[in-house]
Amino acid sequence: MPGIYSSPGETTCGGFTGSYGHEAQDARLFASWGVDYLKYDLCSFHRHIEGKPEAEQTAMMKAAYCLMRRQLDATGRPIVYALCSYGWGRVWEWGPEVGANLWRTTDDIQANYDSMMFNASAQLGLQRYAGPGHWNDADMLEIGNQGLDQLDPQRTHMTLWAILAAPLMAGNDLSAMSAHAREVLTNREVLAIDQDTRGIPGNRVMQEGPIQLWARPLSDGTLAVALVNTLNHSLRATLDFKALGLSGPVPARDLWQHRDLGNVDRQHVFEVPSLGVVLLKMGVASASLR
Image 1 (cartoon, helix red, strand yellow):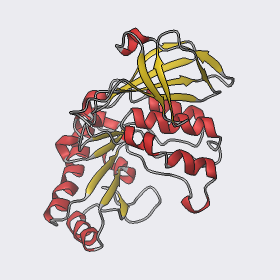
Image 2 (tube, rainbow, N blue to C red):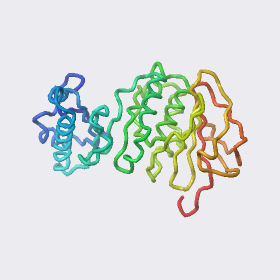
Image 3 (cartoon, rainbow, N blue to C red):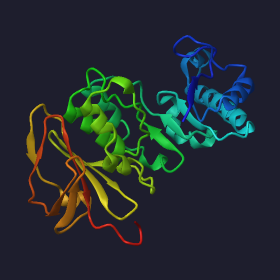
Image 4 (cartoon, one colour):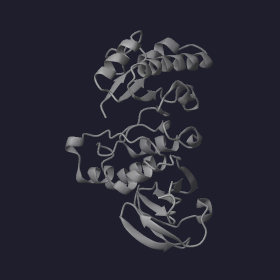
């Protein structure tokens, strides 16, 4: 998927020419190049809205983003439209209205565990705004970059983005990644969770001290469940079946270990690695929904 980057302002965040005043011209050029994806970053458009009342700022952002969507549509080429306003103006409330397919909900992610966890937690409460064709964007994956290059935190990163139904955009150097980074980014079972056709984002359903429990309903009637350990040493943990809406023993599969666990119940103890995760697919897939 060829992609390109621009801004509704005069310059991009990198100081290159933006699309301000040339939206139709740029849209036609992008389409002629075979572009399938446009990230449209607020950047220098800040100067047009700073100092104005919040409602006016939001109206101006919406108008600028809507203008480029109209010009993209006029080319006749289907182009995925990714907004980046860093959550300004509660973009999740009006992203679909301006034709966005995804929108950033936070400031830029950094290649460290704390930043990754902050961006994941910032999605809580936004689930109802996302679904097929319009997604909350927690920012790019930092897997494989210095600062987030250990296996267990990388798995946590990938797991949370999959549970959240977040767009997956590798932010590392693909030509020079480690075996661990490649294994995390290409795990087909985890990718299938993120790309589930039902498109319902998951949520953090329970936290007990440093242990978090996340869950996401899947299109085949099963449940993706993640036990996340936020401490820098391993912990033993059990599943809160009530928080998950489950009762009785349920068949489970460990998606990072690629193995079936048989039936698990509320007494089943999991060893959750330091800053790591256990990701399960729980339940029996409905034959009619597979």
